[in-house]
Structures are given as C-alpha cells and as structure tokens.
Image (cartoon, rainbow, N blue to C red; front, side, top):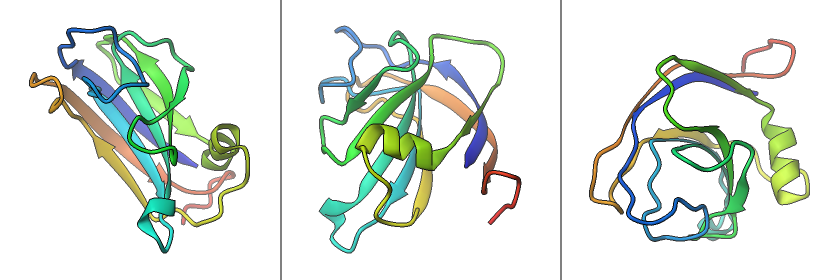
Length: 138
C-alpha cells in the first residue's frame, strides 16, 4: 500500500488537448511514481499516478516514453482542499500490467513538472506512507 495527501495548486499551461499518449506537453501538476527496478534498467516497471487538469479520473494509459510505464489518473481539475489517496500497489500493477510484479518496489517518487510546456506548475505532498494492508508498516 502507498498513501499520501496532495494538492495541485497550479497546472501547466497546455496549448493542445491534454493526453496521456503524447510526449508533446507531457506535463502534469502532480505525479507519484512507484518504481520496480530490474537488473537491466530498460526492464524496470513503473506505476505512475497522475493529477491531471482535464483528463477523466480513472483514465489509464501507457507512457509515450516506455511501454513499461503505466499511467493512471487519480484526480482531475483544480481543488482547493487536500486530497487523501490510498492505493493497493499490487492490485494496480496487476490491473495495468496484466500479471503479478516480477520485482520488488525500489523507490517511490513524487514529481511536479512543466518542462515540456515551458510554463509553471505547483503541487504539494504530505503524509506519505508505505506499508502493507492491515497496517504493518515496512
């Protein structure tokens, strides 16, 4: 399990329709990555949870950068309040990759980016926790 609170304060300015499919303007106010590193970097798998500006919650896709990065939109649009998330990493992995994870989790990363749009984005993250269902933190 992974849980956190987040708030997207400013979205990157895009000139085209927001999409999970293209490298062009591949910026989001907030992202959370769960990384399953492999011995060969190109075999690593990644779950990427996204706070988008206009994509529907529940949208999924494959990163335009690698078929080993699966995307899931958890929040969409501006909200003034903090939003709490709790994700069952194993269940999300199976849903997006179609099989059990082959590797252990190596890292969890939080990112706000706007380099493709050349604009600005802002998000804040808090109360980040990793553990097992049933409360046994590891």
